[in-house]
Length: 268
Image 1: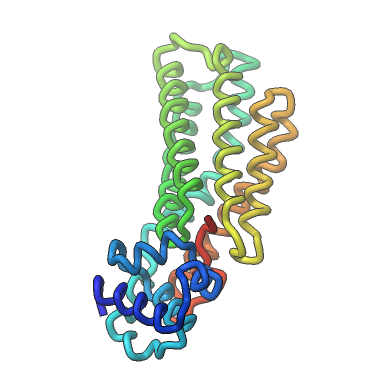
Image 2: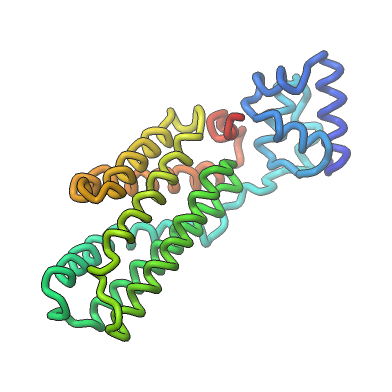
């Protein structure tokens, strides 16, 4: 069964049960806007969402399963690659932080080419990791997190371009704008933290713990004074992001009945 017939069927079943859209929301852990868009035929929901709706309406899933079997359930290969990139970035970032500190303290005593390669490698791996999360947002809807991810992506493009230009031309010194860069990244991490905090009833509220760590790290880094202390929650935040990504990838690949926590969407 495809749209718009699917939306009409769900609407008919809901009305036959005497349920409002708000009451249906409480039974299947979706938000009202999602149900409105499905019923109007604006979007085609994934199989686990369809199953959650039909189970909430006491309708036999097998009767419509053939039209949705495994739809959207295959894990895109690039998600595994973005996770690998994130893992590589996690370790490479320590080298970048150390080299950046030495560069500021000692000036141009380091090998510029080595520093530049580390900068480029860090940027590419983190950009790939962020892109993976941006694509994962389609499976775990969260508009605030999506905006935060794109904001962080943009900040990385800007500041890594500035760093590389300064290293290549020698016209800009990292120390001259370092505090401004730190403050902007602090804001971006805090924004990411808020995005993860917006998830409700997802994986035993682990995203909210991750979000709190990101928010704390962002505030400390933004302050400038607490940068060193901010590295601790920041490290835990990035480990949490990696863990949540691999958890999400594993759940996307399930073809059995959807996990209720995975079908939970951002609550309005």
